[in-house]
View 1: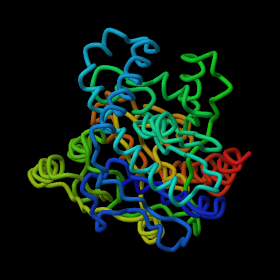
View 2: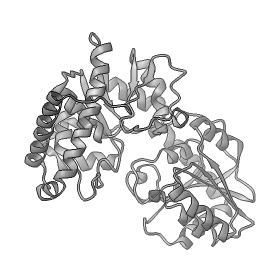
View 3: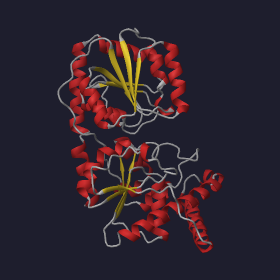
View 4: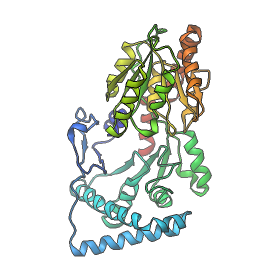
Length: 398
């Protein structure tokens, strides 16, 4: 489901002989929901881990020993010991499950890759790092290098179970390097773990350059675009409140992305009762999203999340030269320079204030053109996938 890794497949394919993508939480794998378009790259495969191995009595004893070993390490290393002890039962079962996944992956690696140099890359600094830790402890997994990206929820915010970040120091000790995707994340890690500062390196994500030409100032009805999953963190219900403060006949909200019924249905009911002009296009792949940008005149892109890393949707907006209005959370301020290539708003904004910014954009063509030009320049200097990913994989290999 992590569709944004599609942007890296070309560079993964070019940098390595073989690439195996491991979705370690796919309990009931459904190929129809696979958003990784790896088929065009013959050296990229997805390893399905939803069918986990069974354990003999002897293997269960070894798993119990490994689980307690990691738990004791966590209790010793964590700076949130009281919270860890409260969650000890939950952590115990988490590690047991990780152990089964670690065994599944190790069986595959040891069978088919005995003579190859293996590099381990975690897209998130999350559960996968602990799974690899168990592979190293119990299953003789010996990668050349182990690294992880660090985004937002795996860096600043409470991991699951809620209340604290689990295994933080264990993950750090297990990795050769951590690549935060924002300067904010880099500064956070350097401050929190000053003794390990040499392990931390900034590595922005990126999107491919699908730009055709500078967009022209749009006409009515002005299209306001959001691109995201429909989830609580994205706060799309606030878009409805914003648009109720704008003339209904002059503005249209376009949303690209889908989500689970728990969030989609209440949003649909809210939209229907508001009477605003809205079009939901559902999930689309990157090429389709870029196609929409190139075929339509868009006034602005909106991101209302209360928590972010460095949003790919904003990178895509910048690449196409579309001004963006976004909450000032996570690394968003590293992408949007207020009143230069877009607008930053406080996380606890009032819908009227955002509506005023949208309305002002729609009535000032000169300002809009200036923001558009600066948006494109920001993309070229910071978020071009070709440069960012080639540098990233070369750093991994070096």
